[in-house]
Length: 102
Image 1 (cartoon, one colour):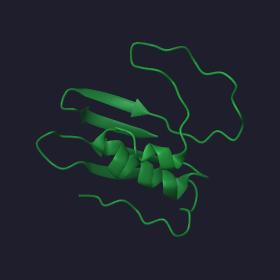
Image 2: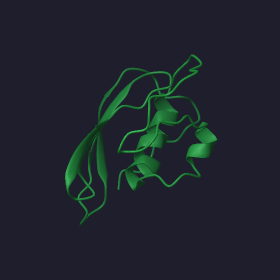
Image 3: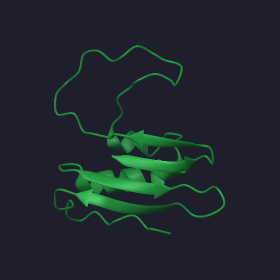
């Protein structure tokens, strides 16, 4: 889970990212924000995703994919993205380095 403050300098977001352990045959219908789709973890690296997702959210997901992590990100457009891990309920996955906090 990530709370992003001042995302793109104008809004706040609360996002939930999780791994589904079961197969899904259907996805929700398309909405104004886009369409729901499933991607492999490797495919995510090739998508046009926000900087916060690429530099913070996905690296933390890689570390905690079998547990829970809650973080807060300050997305001031005039400075670097700075995040704080608020809570972690499982040991990070071995061998996955943490993202840089700068």
